[in-house]
Length: 372
Image 1 (cartoon, one colour):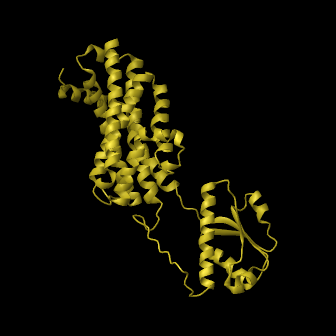
Image 2: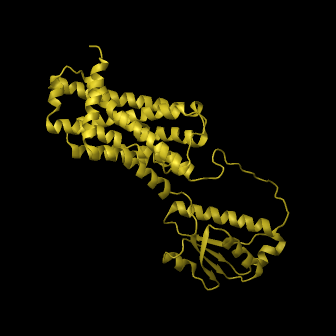
Image 3: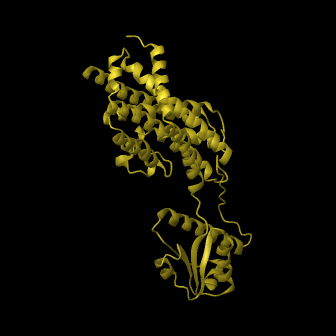
C-alpha cells in the first residue's frame, strides 16, 4: 500500500492541535530547555580557583618565603594558614584545606647548593580526584615558575612550547556550552511523544486509529512529524539563547549541525513513540524516558567526562546513545569548525540510530494493528 502524504499531514495537524490544547505541556517543552541551558551554562565549570591551601614553613628563610609568595601571588589558591606551626594534616582532616605545602628545614641551603632543587611535600585531599589532580598540576606549575625565576637566564637542554588548538583560552564554556545544547533538547521530544502515545492507550482512543484507514507507517510518520517540529523549535530557541547569553556561534560550516539536529530530534521522537507503545501508561512512560533518554545521555555521552573514562564493560552502550554522537557535532560546530571532514561519522551514526528506532516503533505499531 502506497504512503499517502495527505494522511500523514492530517495526523500531524491532529497531534499539534491536541498538543496546543495542553498549553502547560507545550510551554514546558519549549521553555524548560532554555532554563536548563542557563543552569548548565552558568552552573557548571571545570575551572577550580581559590582552593583552600595551608603552608607549613619549617625553614623560615628568604628563599622559603619567596617560594611561599609564588603560591600567594596566584589566584588558584586561597592561603588559609601559613607558618611554622601549621598542622597541615589536621587542616585536611577537618576539611578546612584541600591541599597543603610543607617546606622542610634546610630548604634554602639544599636549593642554593650547586643550584639543586630541594624537596618539598605537597599534601592533597584525594576525596575529589578531579580537584586533587588539578591541585597537583597547579603546584607543579608554580614550582616550575619559582625555579625559573631563581635560576635567572639559565636555559634547560630542551625548551617545550605548547599551543592550544581550537580553544587557546581554555574557556570552559566552549567545552560545556556545546554539550549543554545537546543535553537540554534531549528530554522533551521523546517525552511528549511517549506521553501522547501512552495516553491514547489509557483513554482507548487508539481504537479509532485501528478503525481508520491509516497504515502503521502513516500513523507513525504523522505523529512523529508533530513532535519533531516541536523538537526543532527547541533547537532553534536554545541556539538563540546560547548566542545571546553565552556568545556561542558557528565556527564553520553549519550544515552538519543542522542535519545532525534534525536526525537527533528524530531519534528522540521515534524512541519516545516506541516507549509509549510498550508502556501504555503515562507514569511508566515518564520514568522510562527519564532513564533511557535523559540519564543515559547525561552519563554516557561524554558531556562531563570523556567516553574513554567509562568502564569498557558498559562503554558499548554509549554507541546507542544519540547524545554521544550529537555532542561531537555541536562541539565541532561551536569550537572546532572543521565541518563534514571531522563529523561525518557522528552524522551517519545518528542517521543509523534514527532508522533503527523508526524500525522498532514501526514494528510495534504494525504488530499492534495486526493484534487488534
